[in-house]
Length: 63
View 1 (cartoon, rainbow, N blue to C red):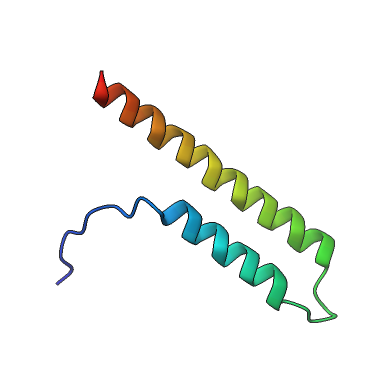
View 2 (cartoon, helix red, strand yellow):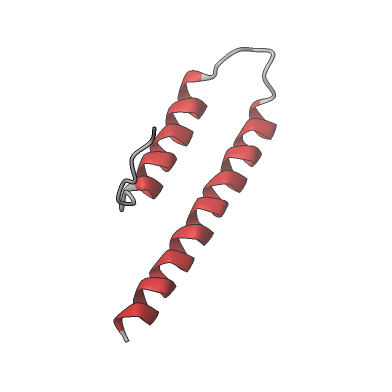
């Protein structure tokens, strides 16, 4: 059974770290590097959007 855990405030940084690691370690010549970068940029933008929304929620709770 999973226990309820507090949200990790550094989750966005962790996710970005994994994206960078994936980009750096994926050097297989069969991989389209341009497409991979575009996908990772898209995922990074989703992370940023989520981070902005979380900060807005925190600000609203503080008011």
